[in-house]
Image 1: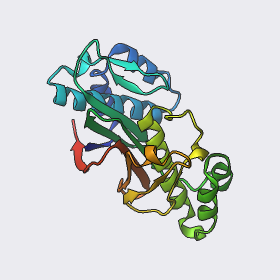
Image 2: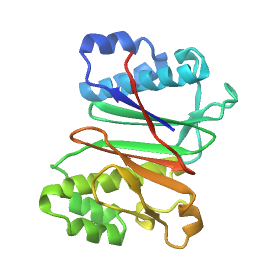
Image 3: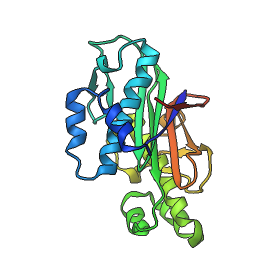
Length: 228
């Protein structure tokens, strides 16, 4: 499995130049964002995704067509290509990751660590009981990192399954909250046979970020860097 790192912190002039590589509809959608940083991230992550997929498919980046599967997961339009390429994109405040596999489902999530969020209240709403307990037992100094480690792992799995295999909420499965890169155990009460089909791994996304990827079946991550 390939994971492409994309730096979205670029000069405005470069953003304007790369924006021309997006289809008009996508450029207009980004333009509706009220915040410049959000517009920049949408433009550059969209350009990077199309450029990366085009390299695999030997096609024009502008030609790629997508469909949205039930549950909201984007895929390559089968009417445009018969390729078994699967992909997933995530971006957060200046950083993006694009995960690419062949013939398997994949999900990726990256988040910039923030200390201004009510993490205990969010955890109580979205995390499984065992995750909440583990988070509360972590030292205050690493609690934000633990929260985002857990969050990205859960989001990566949900995105990989296409908004959830069983339409279950985030509380219905559990992962580790311990920060750090590497494999992460996945627990789905009552569905062990499903949990063992998936592999979940936290990624080193650089200082100030947490990231994770989920893939159906065993995998080895190869890290790549996109730079237009």
